[in-house]
Image (cartoon, rainbow, N blue to C red):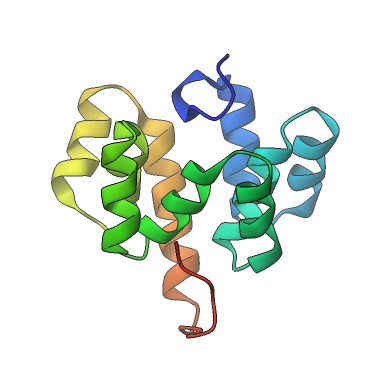
Length: 137
């Protein structure tokens, strides 16, 4: 596993991430206790945790902060992901934004877990009100 590259994490860990994104704190705790603090921070960041965004930058995971911003269609974050060759994160962020070609790409590559997580993130985002003070990438 190459830490920081979402496609290298075991499926069990991605399933735990999906539950953590859904707000289940026992899965966030699981990620923390089992050596995946960056994914716990990502889940918290996606749910609006600005401290988590700072943690991601401080601990060498700017791609997760960029992904979080890219899910909100932040052009700078999308460009940063492209420039730094985080292709899957860019596609996943587009799937969160309900881009049909990104969703189809993930299906075609048998990466259904990312579509599952995209739906979970999109659902959470649609239930939130926009906070102009949330730090963007």
